[in-house]
Length: 328
Ligand code: GLY
Image (spheres, rainbow, N blue to C red):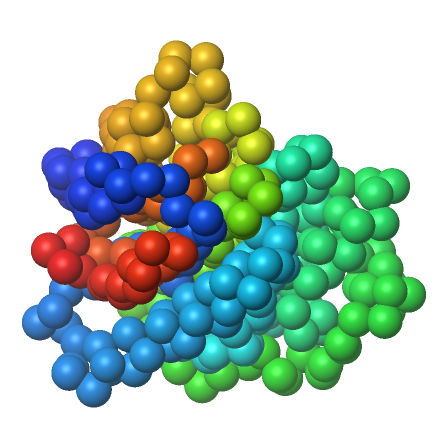
């Protein structure tokens, strides 16, 4: 039972490599989902493909920051790459709903002014993260959903694709397997693969973004944490930027992304400590998953309570690393 397993799992986190260094001029971290990622379940070829995909997304975001671009542009650039890659549960490669459709959620937040944009249940917008950004940039609303969000995307000139663009064979097989085995959408491998990015730019501004197809076999218009500001995504220049992945219901209930920034702002905790404390709380509640976070000083960290999380980070001091398994 994953609930029990999650509660028993220790928190895994890479040591905060930037902490002993000077504040980097810019810093970036990305994730491609957490879950039961074990080396013995992955061929060397599959592992190499995932590492290359993560590196490509990291490089896309790092290029923006290295050239003096904004944290928000870097977050968008990294996530667009992951949304176009069918290996990840976001954009192309999104999981299927119970009815056999793909319904995607995404959000962004700008730490400089705490502006935010989010969308839920969209099925024809090629890059949901761009739609979330358009909602934020437009400024009238924070959260759009369904047909209205699609109409807004058309009015903003975003790229619209037929629903088949998102439908991949391996995700369809996962839905069929889930139905055939009478499994729940909550079984571990059917609810992970969300992507996200957090960044600090040369101006000291922070940004976060998250994009997902949600859970395989989700029903009744279910929406997870990814588009919920404060749960799956949060950014505040005074503290940190966070993007989450995992069992969304728990991340919403714990207000994960906001809770991490709050601990830093109000209790003066470091970013690793704040992230670990909040993820321990999620585990205690019975939830599993992970977060990436970058502090106002550019320290980029990971914290997760699953056996693995696709993750990567880079900064202006020359760090550029990709990891998958807890022991990486
Ligand atoms: N964390 C993604 C979801 O629960 O939908």
